[in-house]
Length: 219
Image 1 (cartoon, rainbow, N blue to C red):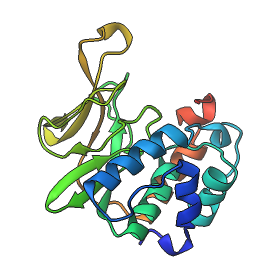
Image 2 (cartoon, rainbow, N blue to C red):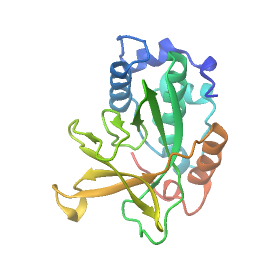
Image 3 (cartoon, one colour):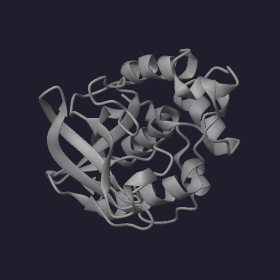
């Protein structure tokens, strides 16, 4: 599904500086997610410079692992998914709508990629591609939290778009709200996404003239 046969797992783990266990456990997931977020850079430079953003594993691996470049959520998640698949994890890919600064009556497109990892019947939201992502997976339950510094996050089941329920990721503070206020960062449903779905979303954020990633750089 996620082309893990094309991934050089040893090179990826070396890029992360990861030397721990490779069995598909929660402890391994925690360590890999933290290492990925703190090691692999996040930026939108290629879309801003009108360069092609490819999502095939060999291209993403060459860019993020071999050349040490940065990328945005689709690239990060494709790489992370290939690694998890190769290690034997079971997961579902999903798409979210970024809410920060958005008018809730006019939802943004679902163009943020994330994974839900299933471990012994418990599901964990694993978001490695937001830029300042949670440093640990968040249990997919109403009230699930990540208190890993410096970015606390809260997961709630609530009305997300026009009366439809779904999951909302809240982050602590930011902007004029103050440091002790929870604000919605992104919302999502559990509708499975596949590589072809990410290819469509990636085409929009990398090329559309209304995509913020083509009008200004984010690093």
